[in-house]
Each structure stands twice: as C-alpha cells, then as structure tokens.
Image (cartoon, rainbow, N blue to C red):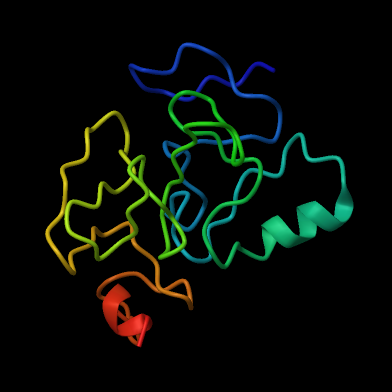
Length: 142
C-alpha cells in the first residue's frame, strides 16, 4: 500500500503493483493502449515483471483497478478499454443500438447509436480506431 495517484476521485491508495487509468508509462501510454507497460515495482514474480515490461498487447492486466478500485472479475468493474466481448449493464455489446460503453475517469457514458463505438474500443487484434488495420465492430463479426 501507499501509492496514491493524482486525481480528485482517488481516496484509497492502490496496492503495490496495481495501477489505474491515471498512470502513464515511460512511453506516454495509458492503461488500455496496446503496448502499455504497467508499473513493475511491487510485482514479486519475475515472469510477470518480464511480461509487463514487454508491454501488454491488450493494454491492461489483472493489476488494473478502475476508479472505484475494482479489479477485473469484480462486479461492476469498468475496463480501461473494451472489445466486442464487453457487455453493458443491459447485456448489449458494442455496435448495438443504445450500447453504453464503459465510463472513463469519472465521465458518464452516453448510449451509442447502432454501429457506433468510442475511442476506447479495441478490435480482435487490439487495434483502436485510427490505427492501421483497425476493424470496426460490426465488420469484425462478419
């Protein structure tokens, strides 16, 4: 325990080795961006440190904590990015009418129209909108 990242909504410190969407790696990447390197301090397992140091293909791992300090698998967990496997509270997935993407940094999400997605969406190859080779969610299902 001990590290408290800057920000108005962070009242509880993160456990050693954990990070949230305010953490920026040495390459300027944030959690949810392909190749993101999370903090290595507090990670005792050498293999896990090596994996993290190489950069995470999907941009986060089990040590990511959302704004409410929930981990992946906890009820209500909000990931820093999402794929077409993510379901909103109403069971809708990206591309469906009224899909609600995960909220980010305290901002409330708005329902999206059919076929729409946000910048936090990643295709099956962990590419985001605007990156070469990105496949939009509805095309990815064909």
